[in-house]
Amino acid sequence: MEETAFKSASLSNELKYQIQLNDLEAAVLDLKVRVEELQRENSQLKRENNQLKKMPLFVAVIVDILPNGEIYLRQQGNNQEYLTHASDDLLPLLKPGSKVAVNNALSIVKIIGNVYDSRIRVMELDVSPDISYAQIGGLADEIKEVRESVEYPLTKPEIFRRVGVEPPKGILLHGPPGTGKTLIAKAVAHEAKATFIRMSGSELVHKFIGEGAGLVRELFMLARERAPAIVFIDEIDAVGSMRTNDGTSGSAEVQRTLMQLLAEMDGFDNRGDIRIMAATNRVDMLDPALLRPGRFDRLIRIPLPDHEARLAILKIHAKNMRLSNVSLESIAAMAEQCTGAELQAICREGGMMAVRREATAVEMIDLINAVHKVKADTTTDTRMYI
Image 1: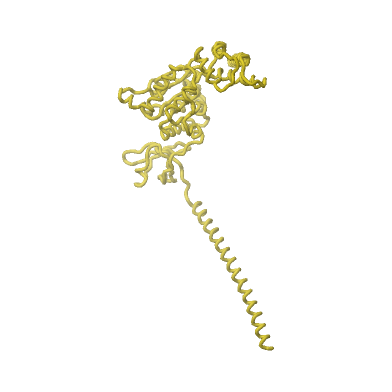
Image 2 (image 1 turned 90 degrees about the vertical axis):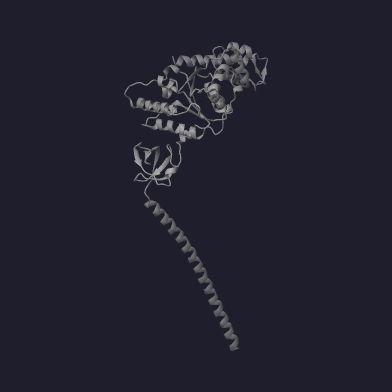
């Protein structure tokens, strides 16, 4: 009896100690987890502390590398210029135009490559435009001139080398609005399989000193990296108009931007893989320095379409429309003095009138009414600007 009681007490004590041991093991495990969390937190705090102790780095652009090994820098933001040195490891990797990080002592710490302004990056089309010459009605002679000046130097450079002829460095398309200047530029980029970088002249006009010139500089740096490339500046008269001395800061900033554009155009080789195109409705407003030989060597006027060109344009825009008893030749005769953009509007308005009637096809009366509507709108718009 006593032996049985002793065994029962031993088992009870053993079970109690086992429970205590399990509790202690669980507590040890919790403490280990907590220690690991504290170690991670400590490591994170150490990294943040080290980061706070680091001196900030500034971004600068290498302007030139001098023969004695000195680096000519221009700091971004304040445009201040300095002379500094680079380590023997970094010096062979540096070249003019590279962006680098410098410390407070203006020593080059690392190369950061070219970081472009977001306004420049959105100007680049990742693929060539899907516009072909077949989508342009008329303008056969003008397209031929553009191809000789822009496309052939990119696709057939050996011909120019064989003959010994320097192709035009840049071409300027001028003429009334809506005649197809931008369309021609896109078609050339498509046929040349080149990167198409399009920008408007108004995008280069800014109120802060040096901002417009900086955008021009980055635009042409991007073109060099993406070569073969076509740089197309639309409405160039916004930044390239004749320089005046009215004493305002805005006018001075536009002139700085223009001078940077002129300098960039002078820096290109005629036979390079970068072609420059521009378009304007007011060629008479452009600065003579922009039009001199060596910058825009060829000025091509894009005129209003004649009867045959208007018919070709109407056929292009009406190709996918369902027509019923429609004479496009008669519509082309009625649409005299209309631009290509207005002819496209005529086809669109004629289609909308058929949709309004819930018809199954576009009829002649729809296009006639569309001609009258577009011409009336054009006359009204013209009077607003007189």
